[in-house]
Length: 377
Ligand code: KG4
Ligand code: ZN
Image (cartoon, rainbow, N blue to C red; front, side, top):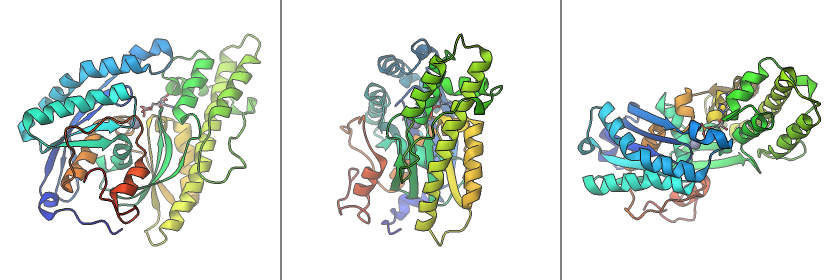
């Protein structure tokens, strides 16, 4: 990949970066060190979830999330610095998610980062949340590009070919609901509580998946996109069709929904593996398939992906769940990578509700874009 090389002085020097995240329902702050060889060390990482606040509503309520983030962000930034035994003066830059996500939430981390950057005179780096997820396996191991990423969370279901830093190609994404929403809505229909994924997995443990015949989505559609809306309706209809449903009915339907979601994810990901393998015929095998996002915690989903990966000559990499779900270490990591390349942002950089990763990459890299220097220039 012919990206222009980073400035050697910046590249060789270790960089310490504070990262802030607030785009969905986790408020988080972390400090990482990026060594000159690109190795990442997480010095601190604090997360404050909001599950209890949203549980009565069966899903994330944007206004509640925004208020909770705004209240938490300052304290979390301080905690992250303290637990790394560092101060703002030791930071080389301050990174914050600036999109995509719930706009009121995104603004909390971004505004806090702007305030800290202004007060300390340190550079600000506005990070695409999806780029954080895309790079997250490097929090665990110095994985070499390229890799294929399946991001499956409550907000996103995407297959991204991570070809180099700043070069991301989306191979597929959901046409309607995210995979996490499919779990959450299944749980809601059956009164299993929020967040739904873990509740469905627990209920499914004693269920028989074959009892309910749920449809396999997008059977006749080529490509690697996903769809979960039909499954959601089928689960509701199956549930409504039961007369005074009991525990076993709940377990059986949870098991059926879980295996239908897992099978669909594995099937479309298998197609993406074929596309990816063809694009990189000379890369060493097995090729890496990274799965990230809250749904990656599901054992049935992971087993289905592992089987598909083995069939296609891929190695499944599942980072520990604290790096799979929303966290600030991945934002600090992405920020440090930009900083190492001299890419920082002005203090008037806006929060963005929508910010596709591949469109951004197209403007960042003259190799695959229209020759513009990109939004960070
Ligand atoms: O990545 P994440 O923590 O937050 C964002 O959505 O950004 O993902 C949360 C989603 C929720 O929809 C939740 O139900 C789902 O991940 N999830 C699971 C499991 N644990 C969390 N889904 C299936 N099985 C699980 N064990
Ligand atoms: Zn996320």
